Length: 358
Ligand code: DNO
Image (cartoon, rainbow, N blue to C red):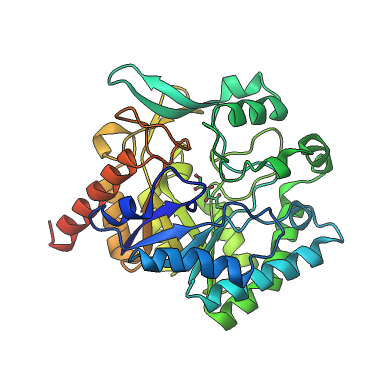
């Protein structure tokens, strides 16, 4: 297992590489070029600049996240071929600089989503991200995006880049006629084009789940349960077509059994990377908050999760995911230093105990 940390780049992150380097057990970063719009080529110069900063800090960069898929690809528009060509160029460029896994998602229009980015936890004064389907019901997508932008402390959230969201209503309307089957066809077209290139250059694509793990705003979504990921993996059968198994995203849905899913996809050798965090269900089915990483703080059994990873994909890449805001920290929601650092140490502790047979 390689324990890593997400880093958005020197001009875009409240956390420095030196701070990351000082977290015990972290050997690398899951990187992102935060300024790139979906569909743009990530140039060699930009990649070298980013990766060399990590290497200078003594950190590896074998995993890259959020190489976002242009909406025209998901919609299956004729212009998709140009964006697929760009995507392929990015894959080739990343492979040249040591990247082994690319985490992406195929969620129409919206990436991950919460109804509140900083809800006070009255028991200890910390702040967590929170979701309630009933609150969502009273909002339009435009309301939600505006609210998200206003509450993100001046940081761009992954998937919420202003340029993607400027024409939100127009793009939402294009999906009106689309169902899951046609989305899967467009997904297959994309995979058929890129996976052979990944096989050639030694990269694995890892699809991030829908977050929350169910369809929202009537948009088709494919990646929120075991059956959905089975379909995605079967769409182009290859070692390079894998899952980014995000325990918190999938765990938002009370019907997903996370250790069982890890065993299922791990035994197929189809887990490209893991995001590991906990989530607390709040009474109703589609109401949850993000908790501290410990099993005792949420509804996921983190020991069982780490044990499943140890059994079926012990060499995978892991990162602690979204933390709470604690100790007065301000930063990009979910991506402060303190709570994620605590999470990394806790997960490393579980790993040591499991490795020693306890
Ligand atoms: C949320 C992240 C996601 C993930 C992308 C990958 O915080 O886990 O933004 O990186 O969905 O494309």
